[in-house]
Image (tube, rainbow, N blue to C red; front, side):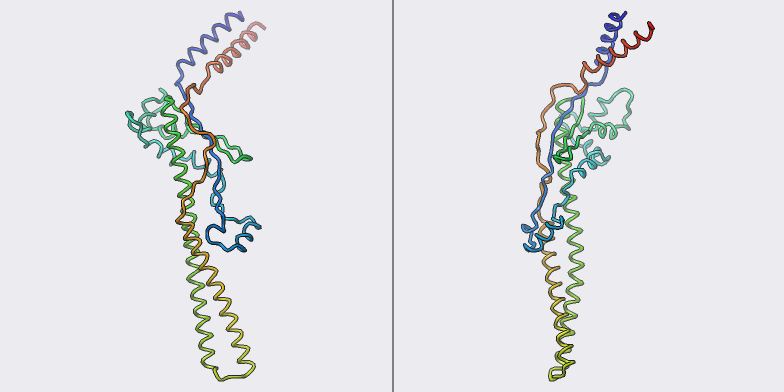
Amino acid sequence: HYIYASLTSTLLAVVVWLCMPKEYAATTSISDEYKEMDIGIGMNILQAEINKAINQENSGINDIEVYCKALKTEDFARKLSKKRIKGEGTFGEHVIRNKSWWQSEEDTIDIISGSINYNLKQKKAMLTIELKDSDPYVAALMLDSLVTELQTFINHAHHNKSAASLADAQRQYEIARGEYYAAQLAFANFADAHSKGHLQDTKSKEKELKNILQAKYDAYQEILETCIREEALLKRSHYSFTTVKPNVVPNEQNKSLLGYIIVFLTIALFTTFAWHQ
């Protein structure tokens, strides 16, 4: 009985394995490496060291978890579906032609999103990305497209972050400039009105206005430097990650025949054992 069950379950496992859609998984590993040096983008040495000490260096999106969240979005799957494959049209059309019998054309984006998987190693800040498809060459090609889209996404995120920082700095600049000019005018008017005054109160007031003017000037200069720095950041190109393991065309199916045999064999043996108790 056990021999018969074993042979039957093995044969059934092979049949099911042959009937299941073939899948090939292309993989690549990337590591987060984006980290700008504050000194290199216009910040004075003292302020750069202060930022470093309080852990506020300019590290952009130095968080590889951001990549993970982006990979599984519908927007990413939709962009990937529009990528063209030589001789096959778009990736979305390829997916529709090769979908399983129980899936509909409306499931295309979900199918593409489901074909994308990742494994994140926090300690090494390394992200392994996998893309599965029935065609190994298409799997490798679309994984390359996916990584390119990921780089574009990160570049846009860096650009938007820098643009927002620059806009905020420019607003602060306008305020600081207005306050500096107002302090300058107040000091000049007071000095002209009391040019012949030698009273102690007059000298004290003049000193007070001069100190205010100096403080407003320092604040004005500081925010001006910040604007220049943020403008430099906005114009820079950023490479957000480096490839640790390159993408290659997979030559083995993702679903192992041995796995099917073990599962079916286990079920058959347990069932046979239970039947004879």
